[in-house]
Length: 136
Image 1: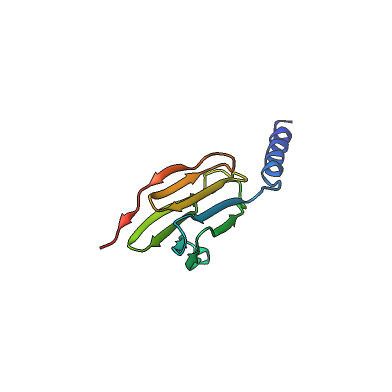
Image 2: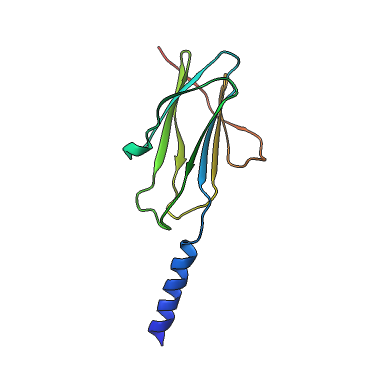
């Protein structure tokens, strides 16, 4: 009887974690100003994750959706992006996968002249996160 109860609990847990999960989103927005292009290069350990060198014009956005497949992540995926414009740059970890699957997570980044802003919910205000580094 105890084995049956354990089996049912394991089976129920498996099906709970196997249910549909909305993808996690990473967004990068350019609000640097007219005629200022934001250059960025996002990468992670997995070579398939590398998006190469990209450009965002003023008021443009980049969207990346990540679907987490397994309920437990032993090797957490991290996405780092090098953001650049003019003589300013910043290398930012824009996404880090949790140990346990999370659904519908938002990581939204906004580039402005005074620095980088961040928010985790669509309806919240932008919070200042980083100052730009100056290249030599």
